[in-house]
Structures are given as C-alpha cells and as structure tokens.
Image (tube, rainbow, N blue to C red; front, side, top):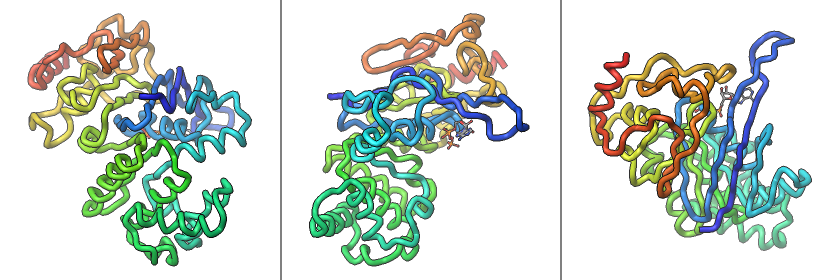
Length: 335
Ligand SMILES: Nc1ncnc2c1ncn2[C@@H]1O[C@H](COP(=O)(O)OP(=O)(O)OP(=O)(O)O)[C@@H](O)[C@H]1O
C-alpha cells in the first residue's frame, strides 16, 4: 500500500493555558510521534483524555503546525512549503469531520452553500458543475436533494453530521480524519454515522483516521490501532490482534477497563493518576503507573520494537498470550 501521510519525530509544545503572566510552563501535547497512514487503510487512535489524540489529528489535517519534526503528504514535505501551497494540498487531499456538527457548520449558511464553499475556495468546476456536485454529495451521505435548501439548525444532529461528512468529501480527498465523530450525537444515530463512514471508505477507497474514546468501536472500525499516552505513541497493534495481542501494559489496561470485552472481569489496576503533560516523567511516560516498571524505565524512552505490523515502545512488554487474570494478579501484587 502506498503511504499517504507520514509523521517523523513530530513534537507539539503549547504554552500552558493557566498560570501567571510570566509563567514558563509548557504542555508537551505530542512528543516524538512517528506514524504513517497508507492509502485505503483505517487507523484508530485511542487513549485517555488529554493524551494528545486531537493534537495528532490536527497535525494530520494541517490545522496544527508541529513545533518540530517532519510531516509529508504524498511525498511532499509540508514544513518546507509556502503556507498557501500547503493549505491547498492538504485542504484538497485530507477531509476532517469534527466532534460536534452544531459548532463545525456555519449556522447562517444554507446547506447548499456549506457544501459549495470548499468548491468555490478551490475553484472546482463551473457553477453548474458545483451545483451538480452538491447534489451528488448529499446523495453520497444519504440526504435528499431538498436538504440543500435548509439551514443546518433545521436538521437533526445525525443529519448535520452527514452534512459535515459531505463537506469533508467535497474536494474528493484521499484521507478522512474523524475526531470523535459520534460522541455529540444521540446513541440511536451513532451506529448509522459509523456505518456511513465505513461505507464511504469502501466506496470511495478512502483512508480513514478515526479518533475515539470508545475503544470497542475503534477496534471494530480499524485495521490498525494506535495507543497514545501522555503525548506519546506507545503502541500500534493490528486491530485483529486486540485486545489480548497488545503488548504494551497501558494498552492492556485500557482494554481491560472496557466493559463488555471478551473477559468481563475487573480492570487491571493502575497506580495513581495520569501525570501532568507540563511535567511528564523521565524515560517511559507510563512508568509511574505501570506494574511492570523497573529501574531502566526511568532512564530512557524505550525504543520501538517491531514485529510483523506490530510496534511497541516498552522495555518490559506483556508476554505474548498473557491473560487479563494473570496481569490483574501481577498488578495487585505490585500495588
Ligand atoms: N492550544 C492549547 N494550549 C495549551 N494546551 C493545549 C492546547 N491544546 C491542547 N492542549 C493540551 O495538550 C494536551 C493534549 O490535548 P489533546 O486535546 O490533543 O488531547 P486529547 O487526547 O484529544 O483529549 P480529549 O480526549 O479530552 O479530547 C492536553 O494536556 C491539553 O490540555
């Protein structure tokens, strides 16, 4: 499969939002991220709140410039491009679907204009062809042609998210990034939106990056699942091997805490809270909560260990085939 997007050693550091005028705190939102997204594949991103999922998604869609590191799209180094070229390339090649369609869509514009906007900005087709494209986009996302005439506020939440997906598809992108695309929607329509995304991916041959707190859904939707912890990518697992094929203690703990998975028993207990992203621990960021941590984990970030499509950053990964019960009793002994 050809590589569409590639991140190499990407860092994003923000100034902390709170603090005094002269505070110097930095938030390490993304640290040393290496990731590729190939044409046609679905990559899921999981991790607790604040681990950097949205930051990673924003880097992928060009909404967040890395503090350092390299991002290439179809072999073009985005960092060395003038802004206008970068925006055109990414704007046309990567579509983004946000969490809340109520805030993502301009409420004052009728749906027709919402969908025409990217076509106008990128000068795609004649006015007549743009009108035709609007009809085509509405049909692709399962909305009637009459939806073009209404304001987003007159639609239901699920219909609005369909419009947001249609807008993301307007320029015929190679990659769609969906950041929590169903979490602001009624439970009853979530499955419909997820099925629509999967269906569009198949029909249009899109690659999909799917960010969600709902790790069961991520596992079901994805070919590969990326686990993030405190700004770091700590594991990339083929989705079919999850949950028990995961080797990073954090991925195993995350999946063990999800109700309804294969072993409906207690979660693997972790020590303490997630450390602050302004002062991440030295070495492995997960070591302060990890039951398998040893002295070497504090010294350095573990290197990536690769085995047939599986990447893990851990000095003491979970042995292949270990059950949740074994891991729970090991973690209880350590606590
Ligand atoms: N503009 C910003 N300024 C300062 N800190 C920021 C900014 N954006 C994100 N952060 C911080 O960066 C870290 C990563 O945030 P991010 O939104 O990427 O996490 P997330 O995994 O998507 O969280 P959630 O699941 O809650 O949306 C967090 O500590 C967050 O508070």
